[in-house]
Amino acid sequence: MKLAITYAILALIATAANIGAQDFFIRVYSGAYDVLLSVAIGTGVGLVVKYVLDKRYIFNFRARSVAHDGQVFTLYVLMGVATTLIFWGFEFGFHYLFGTKEMRYLGGVIGLAIGYLTKYHLDKRFVFRDKGES
Image 1 (cartoon, helix red, strand yellow):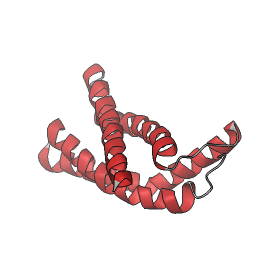
Image 2: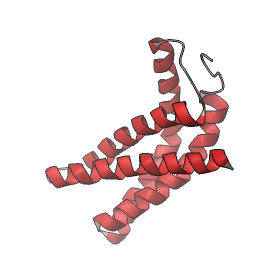
Image 3: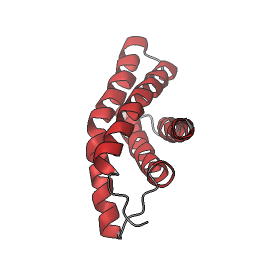
């Protein structure tokens, strides 16, 4: 139960980083492809934040080297492709259906919640199975 609560809190932090980065980008840039670019930037920010938090606080993972950390991060990103498609599907779907940034962000939050739940199981099984250094 403690792990589930910790994971939920860290997912909220990563979600806030993602949506916050999107909102910041939209506030400073309103040109061509602004929504698409904001979602891509938010995805990148959220990905890095979530990786650092999951690695440390969920999986207690310590890489053996910078190269090992890079390999693990690459695998983490690959496991996130499907979950990112879920997140983007909800965010862009809400954007298309409702046409407001608030509803787009709500779709993003819903998509991230579903994606993070799925991603935990993928990461546990495929990414962080080797704890690295103890």
